[in-house]
Length: 463
Image 1: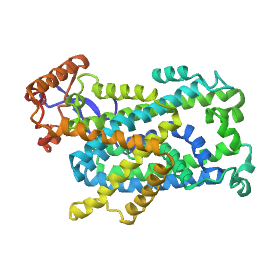
Image 2 (image 1 turned 30 degrees about the horizontal axis):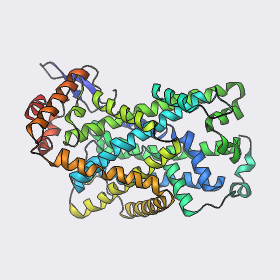
Image 3 (image 1 turned 180 degrees about the horizontal axis):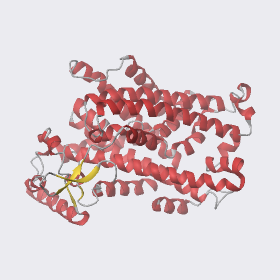
């Protein structure tokens, strides 16, 4: 996968499989913007409008969503330059709260967050491609799943009297769900933190990229929704199965085919960005000993993390068969916010535990406190409004506790288990033609305990 993995050469030595620092400021901004603007802006407007009950309140939710993402990104900027390790939330939580908390976050990311986000993006792609074929009905379930696997006229709607004309009275719970729907469109603002070790001068470029990208995305999202509302009535938007296609039909006429093609290209880019960052998360988890060591390996020629990508794609295929798009969004948004909040609590804990640690960026404590106040409100009322969805998400996270103690904490496993693990790793290496990155050994030496429980034969493969 491009952007951070290459075959390098040592002076006077053979070619080596290497991870190199080559993500500059421009590429860093592209990672954030490309991951945020994937599919959310094409599906979340319907969910936000449905729960708010008015155009004006929906636009307020979008602006506030960008503000909350900006607050969170400021906190992540401090964490990213204070703990300059790839892995994002997982690395920070592991460093601050210990192995169990970090593993639970990793467990939820591998099982739910990344596969569900990829599933939603893939389903968005299939819906937009199929919608012109089925213009007057919902695309067939099987067709959309199979395709996923292969994967400004009504100005009066924006006047105050019309914009705040409520056709339903939203409860606090509805507002929380509206924020969850909107927050899905902003998910990805923390993805640059997953590749910190591959950034050129991360102490400067990480915060710069965040400060450039988040306001830009908020501006684009807000005016995109204004464009939707000027071209369509709220009823048309709510009844549309593909908002951008309906928007294109209203404005572009014979050229309306441009919209599904554009959405397909955008979602393809979003899938690429998610796979890029998820592979780094698996790499960091395997490096810490929290995932099978096979997931820390990359292809010897193409330098792509084949095992990690295969695991992520398999989990995505399973998730796509579970529920509809908007239920999936509620799942991933709730767990995303839960993980964001725990990570930002870690910022406050780190300030208390290590007050003298070098911090190139130090945000005012009012910023994480404000974010956490909103975070608590959102989670409490989300649980109240969608107890089943939130409960299932919490149960899935907690299933990681026995997995942690059996797979990670328990070091003295029977020899038969170690032999099985060793044979599966070797079989996987031969099948995928992968090895450990040979550059970055210095980084691994900084955490020697992370590999102490690996079989000796696996450890020798690193050398």
